[in-house]
Image (tube, rainbow over all chains, first blue to last red; front, side, top):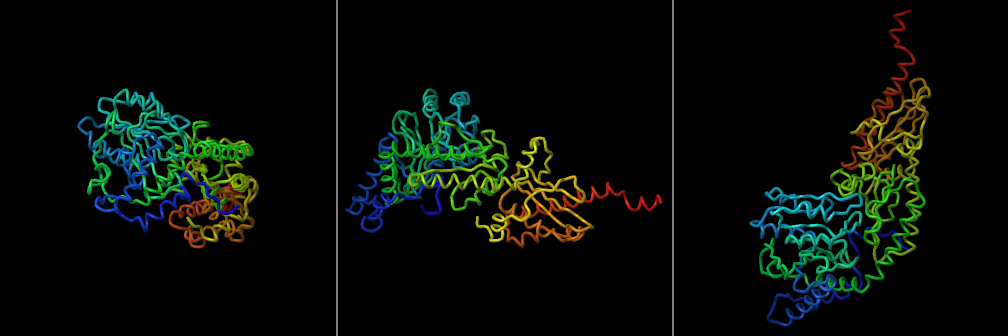
Amino acid sequence: MKLPIYLDNHSTTPCDPRVVEVMLPYFTEKFGNSASRNHSFGWEVEEGVEQARKQIAHLIGADAKEIIFTSGATESDNLALQGIVAMYREKGDHIITSSTEHRAVIDTAKYLEKKGVTVTFLPVDKAGMVSPDDVRNAITDKTILISVMLANNEIGTINPIAEIGKVAKEKGIIFHCDATQGVGKIPVNVQEMGIDLMSFSAHKIYGPKGIGALYVRRRAPRVRLEPMIYGGGHERGMRSGTLPVPLIVGFGKAAELCEQEMATESARMAKMRDRLQEGIMGAMEEVYLNGHPTERLPGNLNISFAYVEGEALLMGVKEIALSSGSACTSATLEPSYVLRALGVGSDLAHSSIRFGLGRFNTDEEIEYTIDRMLKAVTHLREMSPLYEMAKEGIDLKNVQWAAH
Amino acid sequence: MAYSEKVIDHYNNPRNVGSFKKDDDGVGTGIVGAPECGDVMKLQIKVENETIVDAKFKTFGCGSAIASSSLATEWLKGKSVEEAQKIKNTDIVEELNLPPVKIHCSVLAEDAIKAALGDYQKKADEKNPKVEEAAASS
């Protein structure tokens, strides 16, 4: 086993070597501009791009023409929200989203709020799920867009997207789904789920960084968008700019591999994750699972270790790449807004660790991680005044803290 | 974020982790911070003849908070109560090479030192009524 161990696959994933292999010729021999219609250099790369478009569309049950390439899921989210608002502003000025969305959606929605759009940020339940009934009840005659994520990037909770899609369809409202964490990991079908717009990216599915897609439905209904980037009219005019062909070809291959291996990979991942969960939670008191117990991404595990601060814990296992909801790891000094939205107290939000399993993790790495986590938590609890007080029977909630 | 070697050393080998009985003679206890903020420090000193003969800490917080309080206990030992008052958070920042986002850890450590000294003083005053008063009544 090699150290360090990478268990931060929600953040990004390594490129699969099989992906890199198909990309390489497109840097040197096949370097043409896919928009060059008059020579073979253009034709051969256009073929590569269209092949990738098909591979990506197939993974999500879409038509190849409905895939718009962008620089990544953040741009796709921006284009979906801003593009819809700009296009349909005359129809209405209300959008509905949820409080645990990725920042790319939340911050775009807040920007639109400043521009006069009304935004409803729906709450989530204790497991982090959006209720389709809440979506229905939030709809007004001014609503032009519903945007709800497929799976959360911190807690892995999978939203009832098909049901929300049904509500959107019933009311004739465009439905955008940020599916960045779910695509390639769990089955996604834009038809069955009633999705009109969907954001996702390559680097979360073992493809290259710098390339993403926005699925834009072409019929029933035909969704139109005001572009954010103007120029040569690429991507059906919705996103101009010369296509980064090597990245697109890699994205296509990555999508194809995910589709082929999804059934076996997700089962293997869930088994490793369950072992990790059991190995930690079965061996230690006062550890809490964040997110949904079952409706969760197979590679996700988010746990709060009471009386221990997350960043200190990461420092104790620094040969393992993990992420924490602790404020100390963020620039804002606020603990995770996702955990706070579930009703997790600030203290436990500071104590949370996210494990993100991926294609290249092994059972051996999981066993090593369990062992290291138990030791690090024990080490830190021994020096935690909160643990000592709790052991003495003091209720920490009744203590008058000198907040600073 | 990359930690300085000194922070890592204090994290891996924290000095003087533990607790004294709060009610023991000469013990001063300072608890500062709040769990909601992600930092709680408990710092204790044991004083004999106005000299800090021992110090202990327990900290809930990031590596820099742990290192700041561990370092504080090292510095407190052997100092007189008066000298201990002079420990500044900036000294801790300098010694541990803390980055700007971690300066609040050193501030918390200074607060903990002040709180422990204050608690010691309060207990000492309660036990030995003011010297002036004693002098006046005799």
